[in-house]
Length: 348
Image 1: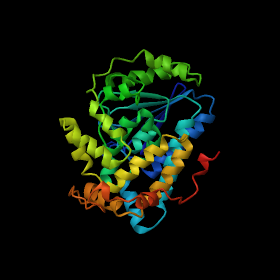
Image 2: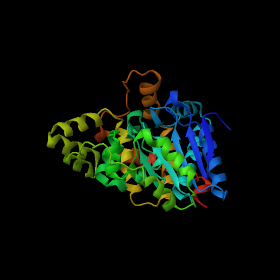
Image 3: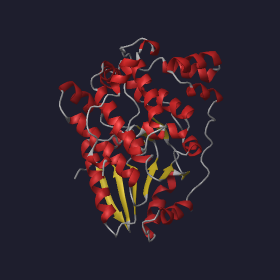
């Protein structure tokens, strides 16, 4: 048990709240363990008809994972990072295959680990302040927690744009792209939870969705995604940058400048991971991501990115390559090398 997770049963709704508001509800190992324990117990409990997860406070659903732990574990050469990723990815897999309705209220920041807690569930509700992003390339890493699977299924151009640049989406854009099934104003979230608790939920998605439908409202209009996003459909990173430079529009120029600030190695690995993930079933994509994650512990960029963004906060990382064109195919292949067996949950 941990006070970082609050849980209660409302009627026959199991309600989980991420409870680290000062840390934007970033996931820790105890949180992953407790969410997993609750979901497994409630899945077997005939008295529970659905599970709902949200975040405490007004700023975030969940803004990521315990990146400092991963950094420190890798530096120390111990097993904490591997254990975190194995259990987190197993939780992502549990969410993907969960037999009961799994409802997420994704209000505020939804990033990294928070994306993994939400997008793999079938009922995803955005609130007023939803800000969705996968910003991992900025810390010398890649969009994991199933990013290789779900990002390309948004359309390869959009998926690569989000995964490579870490672009932020609003509630309206999340609904438009299907990241969220619908929008419920934040002021009505508590009423929605109460309504779900008063309803005899029978374990079917339809029963939960029928309750949610009464609260759905038109989302705030999101900014249209620029036509220049088509550049992100190119087959290589140098080709993407060349297409953006050739476009020359304000949006394209901004994206190109953003890409050139990211880790060239992380960009190349992300681009390849999404292309592979587009062809893989969920479990195999997650197993691939475990290999990539463990291999990132052997790179300079992973530690340098975290140092620059989160430890020293000088925002001036010294990447291992000056440009994506300097990253070789051999260097990319090393990040995809088989490192370990996947968690048992992926094999059941």
